[in-house]
Amino acid sequence: MPTTQEDINSQTATSSQESEKAPHILVVDDDSGVRESLQEIIRDAGYTCSTASGGNEALRLLGNSPVDIVLADIRMPGMDGLTLTAIVKEKYDTDVILMTGHKEEFLYEEVIERGASDFVLKPVSSKELIARLKRVLRERALIAELKKMQSQLRELTITDDLTQLYNSRHFFRQLESEINRTRRYGRPLSLVLLDVDDFKHFNDTYGHLEGDKVLAGLSRIIQASLRKNDSAYRYGGDEFTIILPETRGRQARKVAERIRKKFRSTNIAPAQGNQVNGTISAGVAEYQLGEGVTNFAKRADQAMYTAKRQGGDQTSVA
Image (spheres, rainbow, N blue to C red):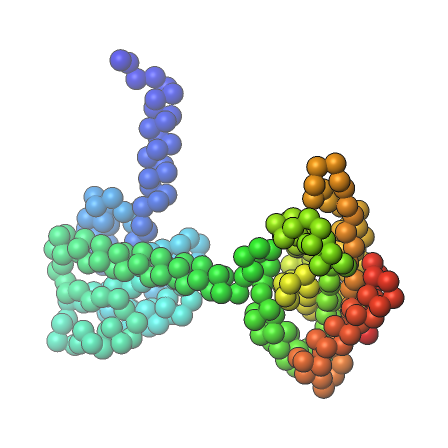
């Protein structure tokens, strides 16, 4: 079959995508012949390859686009390879392989201790070079996967399964952190505590599965009402807390009222033919200089119970 323009475009797009996914290697050497030779070997192996004649040029390239591995000579005029390695490891998520033609001047252990992932001697064969690049790239992939797993595990330990909000354990750690920041910089901090009115009666009437739907729905309303720096938590049962940095008590009350009104206007249909409008009671407390986590949370809790004693479906400020 003849090749159509559509086929050509498809092949070009596929080639472009593969090129974008290919690891990016940056060769740094003051010898242009070495740079060109290494670049040819690396590109023939299917990798993307850029070159730089020195450390400063390499850092400019690193600042413009991600690089997986820097392959650099140790002895270069101006910035040497060891200095370049230290800067790269401090500022970028990039591995470094160092090269030298003077093996008597540098020990492998010394180079690795300075932050390099590997050390090769010039002249390096194409097979050895690609083997070393593949090993470092495999290690990078394994480390990235490990970090991803660690992040996922951490999320599991601090997140409530039902509501997808943070749990109470994380709440107390985060509240302590925010209090320390408030003490240090003298910025306002407020706390909101919410509780669903008559939730036990709802569960007894319609069942816990329907009750779980109510809690999940309220959590979505809470999340939609917060700013980027705010954080919400399932405190326990049908109680929720919200930490509001940089927020005075009167502003926190507005947030609580916005959530309360939105929840009250949301129709809940726990059984066919039935529609219920739930309500919440909210307590608001602004941080007072000198108090600890327990007292701060307790004041918000007491304000919430004041709202309940006054009939519910309202916000009380400590």
